[in-house]
Length: 441
Image 1 (cartoon, rainbow, N blue to C red):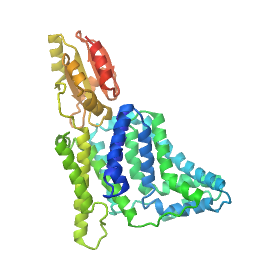
Image 2 (image 1 turned 90 degrees about the vertical axis):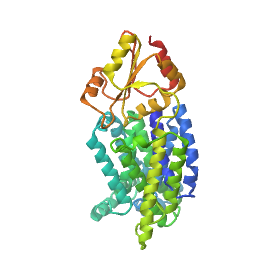
Image 3 (image 1 turned 135 degrees about the horizontal axis):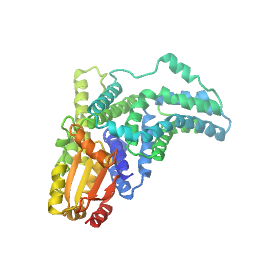
Image 4 (image 1 turned 180 degrees about the vertical axis):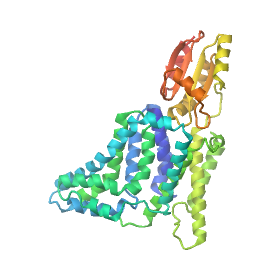
């Protein structure tokens, strides 16, 4: 689960990095990255779920959701109750209604994750996902409105009525009414959930997201709070999510358009990415509007978004690039590697990987680059079978199938005689990899 924690951390870091300069959340983002590093080392997903909760809370601040909070609470009658306890119970029923619609999405994404993973090797699927995210970004920037027909929205808003059953039913339909803003975030989140392969985590992730989405509804309904009025800051939230959607779209086609070759894990690259991101925020990626009367302001917005996207993608690339230092000497021709291992009577490492495989990237960056693994691995012949988009071939797929393995990651260790001695099918740390390598002779 470590690799999933890191990937969720990357997603939330993108969100934090795109916030307006000077905001409290933006100032907290360095600590957020550090906390995720600790969570990664400990193998805990608690912090990942906490950030999913924050993502739900952030979604509730978008223009599709925030203005309807007070109205929705009034419909199911939480603010008209005589006791705080009754108000809290009604508000809880509403939030559970939200969760009852969203949680099954997480369960479905997790159970079908192997299908999604296999699809990510298809160029057309990747291009389709990128175009989808670009379209969602354009909607966030105001190019067009994603919304349900007004008649359907009015019909849904009348579902339920006062009482626990009515509050629960209204929670169910409110998730549909808010779909224009929750859809992009949900699509982004479900993409990562699908890589976990854990039904329990998938359900928990979307349940926690629903709790974050419903927390303001619960507070307003229980304590009769008055929220700040809608304003320009809601448009800032849409710009934030729009920038993240563009980054997500480019991330999926990074191999197809050659972006991966530009990424470096170096301090100059890191500082350059941060400077580019800061310049974009200062230029107006978030706080300047496309609806401004001045052409210069709209041009500033476009340039600012471009710089924010480039800077954020650079930070992602910095995280994904291999660190400097010694690495295993990988061959890329399986037949040549097997012949060399047989001739020299050496054990063989066969590493099947792909850029879309999160656990494969974790193995490359954090296990196979560890000095202890590199030292122990020098007595092996090492071959990498790359199934990334543009490098995937029928021969490589047949080779993977010959190991009776459908998904990734897969690392197979062969002894000197050529027999399989061990295999790895999930992320493991350097200590465990060293122990496996030492047992293979």
